[in-house]
Image (tube, rainbow, N blue to C red):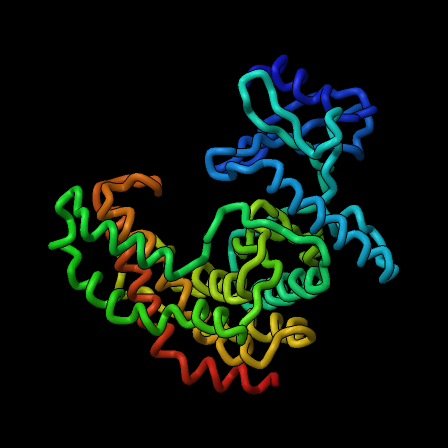
Length: 362
């Protein structure tokens, strides 16, 4: 994007310092992001275009983020924390009074304060996974008493019943004639569908609650300082009401698999027990302050639910002709489906181990 256009966007926000540069930041697939330098070398900002094709209600999106960051900041102040500017994201108000603006091409933009001397990680080990467990557990804990109502930035994002219905619709339509070649995966997913919808059943019975969750718990959605200490949780676009299973299960899905989710080495897929244990230890140390017995009891279910759900989503997209996820080759989504199915099966095989380990902390 041209610098002049970016300057025109930035002028809608109250940045008092002289701007010295604007450079691309990171390689985000959903949002277009830039770092803004100023004459005050200790003060930088992050300019980000919001992808309203994914997050259709931008006002709701920023409403959620404002509530969450404001609540966390208030908690940190009351606790007497130092360096709060490093431990909570801060978004600037635009001249319309909101934390976003819209340009003349109907693109939405926001600006946050850049957190100096911080970085993200992509590699995972037992120390990092333990830190992630504590950090995401504490994130949920700090938000467990929010009074304001948050909305779903992606409606029904982790509703497994809806995802199964979408798969069944895709199977019936079979617009690309692909169902015959994946009938083994289809049969397994549909056979297990009833038991994997347990969370929604418990919710309807009133036995399970929805809490404010991050809903995209990856190691690279945390900032660390130069001493490898965790600072704060970032990428708050998916923060919304959900079951705590979302944050617990999806982290294990992405971080505790021996291979990446699109690896064709299906025989190498499996649960890294050491990552499971370290993440779980860190998570429960904090989260047992507010989790119910039902939530703790079903953490092994959560570990299985998310590879199951992701398999359902990948397979649905494959059957529909690869219309949602980006693919690099014709069977990319099929490989992803088989990968996640293998991880799901391995999670089920480890259920006894996971239950026994979790019981040590309660």
